[in-house]
Image (cartoon, rainbow, N blue to C red):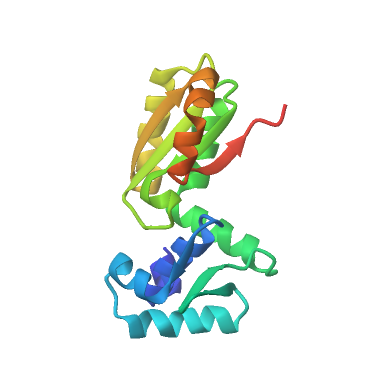
Length: 179
């Protein structure tokens, strides 16, 4: 879908990198091996995003570090577009909202780091979550988003015990119970 609107694969990779997870940062030479693209193609797109005010930069030594400008008026819309492209919103709407009372849902793996992946890794935190229902819902959602979904359940106690280690893996909070 997104490829029909945005023909630059480098631009799509940058959108995934910076607008899916607001904590993602990158610099030109570091993005080259990550994207498998030439530095020139990446530089051109970074310059376009920066000129539009969509990316902010900070100098660290001789490196220019890029990150999403979350105060830009279009940030929320681009974030929503990228989430729809990945299919995360469909998963949450189709599966998580019918699980009972999960406390939180996190996205992990490559997607949480802003890298495109055919695998969606989810961690559902809560007590009394039905694993069988989760698996069935994920199977249905996989057909909608044409990606493989790997979902795991952690009790609230287990999540709290492993929280520091898990959050170092750059988990992205997708949904949180506000009751």
